[in-house]
Image (cartoon, rainbow, N blue to C red):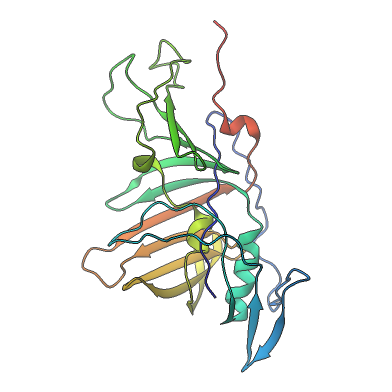
Length: 260
């Protein structure tokens, strides 16, 4: 099953931390996949054949490393493990998310990311040094227009909270979201379940563009919790997504201007 991503976006800082997922998993053994009326489901050697509505196709543009992707889900008719199909169905329902992002080699340095629709907000890690008046700690991205703008939203470090930084490199700040990664594979092998960030996750393994990937998906939401890119190389890239909430408000994805 070819799955190519939906990129979504949205974000904001300084809002209360509400953890939406308070219960762990759906009951064990509930492995049915809910499909649209137009989808066809048949049994094929113990697997399910799942047909999902085909949308605009998107070029992956993988050139030795992941490029930046937006677009829609694609796909045709394919065999898929029902356990994986169930996770993918959950993935497709997530249009909003808030999470901490960290990746190697600095896996202890975290950004906070908000995603809603085509809007994304990234609260950057706090630097040890900064230049007052020329410093921003929040970046807003629009994944449709590929625009990025920065603001300083830290009263301790900014004199002007409304100053707009427009010379921002979109490609530098954009990262695939947990939803993007969960829809990234063409075909995957089920590797088992375990616990991560105090939640149950499912590990999958797949190969794409000559690279081996390992990905852990939250069982409850179908979103990525961890990705190991180029897993068989000497220096694989590790990415962690610690999910905070799957609900994001409009105010969390828009800079709030101050009336001085």
